[in-house]
Amino acid sequence: MSSRLDPLPTVLAAGCRSTERQRGVTLIQGQPGSEHEAAVAAMKARAIALHQTGIRLNRAIVAIGRALVIVFILGSWALAAQLWSDPQSLSDPVSVLSALVELVKTGELWPQLGRTLLEVFVGYAAGALAATLLALGLASARSAERVLGPFLLAVYSIPKIALAPLIVMWFGLGLAPKMILAASFVFFIVFMNAAAGIESVKREQIDILRVMGAGRRALLLKLVVPTMMPFLLLGLRLSIPEAMTGAVIGEFISANQGLGYLVYSASNELNMAVSIAAIIVLVLVVGVADALLGALERSLPWQTIMDGTTARGGV
Image 1: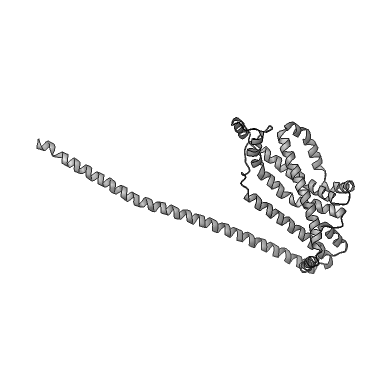
Image 2: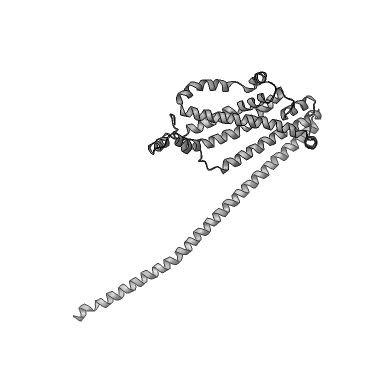
């Protein structure tokens, strides 16, 4: 009898030792677990720091590269002005800078700049608004798109410069023809980008929202506009220099004020320094406008451009 009961204490003791070992393993594993989490957190922090450092380094490289390009252009320009047989027709960076400073000091620049900015802003806004509304309207009525498509293509194929004298003859010598030319240059770029954005809406997404009870207004505001917006903003950015081109062409043909008029009149007087200074102001205006629109684009929470099957049929 005693021999049969002897193993019981042994089994209990073995079980106790096994439980203690398991607790010990758990305690041992708990220690490295916290260390592992700390190590992962440290690695994440290092990765974020490296990423931010990479961004700053990339920005510095871009800034240095742009500065080097500017120095190269100015140096080449100055060298060419010295070697050119007729320096008066080419001018040089120092003379252009002096002319620009003189335009600012005398106040001659500001009325010219204000006139051109007014023409560009009104034409740009009118052309962009009309193009966006037309793209949304044609998306809602595919039959209208099929009817108007060939006519829009025909108008787009006409060189806008060829229409400039006619527009001046039709609308007079005031602000109107410059604004119309700026709007015509902007319209088709914004329209094609907005139409491409609408076409990128997936048919499956439209069907899902319709099943959920969404109406045409909800489809427009919740799906079509957010999907179209990246394309539209791209078109708006691309059309900024086009609006400036349209306004300046109008000022070349008939104007007594504006940066285009200043460039044209100074060129006729062989004053290349003033002419190039006015061109530089035009470039700076376009660059500032593009930078502002780019900052606006980055601040908006619109979804990115989608790939895949596009939606066909009206929304």
